[in-house]
Length: 256
Length: 256
DNA sequence: TATTTTGTTTCATTTTTGGAAATTGTGATA
DNA sequence: TATCACAATTTCCAAAAATGAAACAAAATA
Image: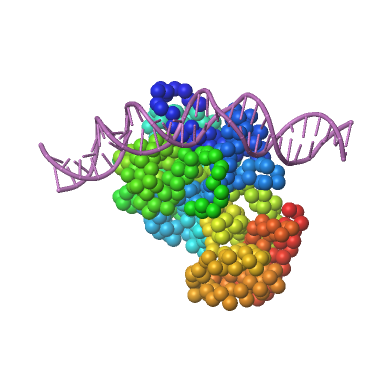
């Protein structure tokens, strides 16, 4: 890992960090690993890994299949993720406005935040006719290919944007994904001018999204978008959506 | 906690358990707590809690608002939850069958597992016309009021069911929720005979669900359900759904 | 400005950890 | 079914880390 920072801090929670490494390994593993796998991969002795796994099992963070002696991530992790998503003030503040927007558009409304240069879906309001089960959302999207992501990139500082573009390859997800740097930069410039971003089947075929950022006093809170099957969006509806997006953005930012 | 088990095991991962207590506290807190709050609530000194919080912050499990010095759960917890939900073989095995079921019914199909006497939603397949964004599902439902839950309760052993009923109050969620013990027992008996459970607006107004369990060799894997706005289900469609449910159940259990 | 409360650092003491080695499963193979 | 090979588990103690009292700093409040 990064050895950059000065290392004169007293060590603390070394077990915690090992535990996180174990959880990471379990998260990334394609097949459920064995004790030996992890001991080798994390270069700690088997007894050490075993004891940590026992504790993690006890608190429900990992699950061990007694017959195969393989390890899985445990379901106890779920409620934390749920609460983490809830805890963004932005969700609480924005929800009523987004509900209005959903009712005005009859389309699906998304709310996202940024984590690790990705958009994390925090809230998804579906059109009123679809049944709503209590669910948490946590999928991620690329910033460069999604309406929410581009709305935020357009607000990044010169330096911050360069950083992002240098470290992220523009992999095409659909034939429409913008994969050329100059085109993306131009697109972001347009978004800056319009105040609204468009993902025209760039992230997912047949889906068009219109997005806007949520910012206040230079701080980035997140972004939201209207997503709709492309065929359902004609010029007239689109300009109406843009108007509604800007109104909603204004209302949310006022309330923050 | 339970002091029942013999306590002659060597302690291990005490920091982990403290860390989990902290995460639990953050999860249950209505308002983001301060260091002092947690030190008091968890009866550990402030330095100790502080240092654990620092480490948790470093690995992204908690987020600290520098200006208010309050703590939140961190977004790094999200991917673990996602993988935990994925790791249930049942989801992998059942998915293709459930997709077929969705296409046959044109309704929303749910898949759930049991955790802590609750149904956890693992998969939700929406009718094909609605747009699908990558999302994780983690909401919970009562067993006694949901189709999936009742399908499983009907398969519980006498003792296990008594246990459940003794420890869970039948709180009404809608006017239709079954809140009388004898009625619920009778309902479960019917479900046992039919092989299919019905939630007739018991969990959510205007929503009717038809559910079935997924079991093999006495082991409970989970349950699935068709959920639909009530008005859309007439007698004829209902009996068709039941037939499809039983076919799907059979197919999944064969494959397991 | 004084006072109280909350967060942070220090450090000696106590407790836990980590892993080598021994032991116990657990299959596979002859 | 006996033998072997390898994975999981337990033992144990030197080495390392955690703990919390106390001192200190910073921020909020009176």
